[in-house]
Length: 197
Image (cartoon, rainbow, N blue to C red; front, side):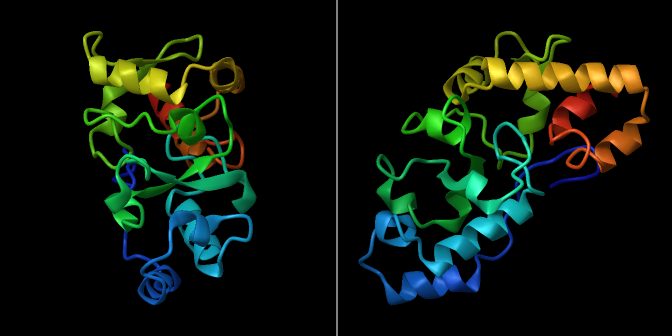
C-alpha cells in the first residue's frame, strides 16, 4: 500500500512461523509446506499475506473473504525459479479462480511482467467504460502481455468491473466513500474506483 491513491504490495517482515518452519525444514519443498495437509506455518503465512493486501487478490483486486478462497502465489514461479520458492519477497495472495490471476499465470512469469510489487504498477493500467482493463500507453507491450497472461479481461472480471462502474454512476456516491468501502460495498476493485474519480 502506498499513499491514499496508490496501492502496491509492500512486504514487512516475514512471519515468525514461516521463518521457523524454514529453519527447521531446510530440505523440504513447497508441497511439504502447503500440500494436502498444509502446515500451520503455511496457513499463518497465507492469512498474513491476505491481511497485508487488505483482503484483495494481488492481481485482480477481488475481495478474498475467506483464507480458503486464496492461495500463496509466487511472482517468479517456483518451477522455473526454485531459489525463489521460499523467498518471502516473492510471495503474494492470489484468488482461486482458474480463468485469471495466479492459477492462469502458472509458469508464465516473464522478466518485464508488471508486478504488484512495482510502485508504478497501478499507473500502467486504466479501464474502459465496459469494464475492460487496458495499458495506459497503447505501445506498452509488457502491460498488454501481463493482462493477457493473467486473464484480467476474462468475462467474469469485465462483468464485475462493469457492474461496479454502473453502480457508482447510478448511486452517485462520493469518491472518498467508495474508496473507504471498496471491500464492503464493491467487492474490491480499488483501482477501478480510483479510475472513476
